[in-house]
Image (cartoon, rainbow, N blue to C red; front, side):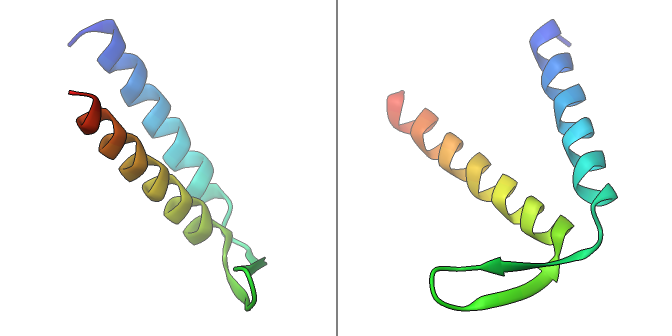
Length: 62
């Protein structure tokens, strides 16, 4: 376990705690339609999309 991996693990855990603490429903506009969903689902989806984009660009650099 390197210090970098420990830092990433701590940030990931804090991010998940933040996501799952925000459980109320909220309205989200997706270009045209407006949907109502739990805030944790929107945050988790956004985080997963960001992680996938980061992994894609990291793999393209190598």
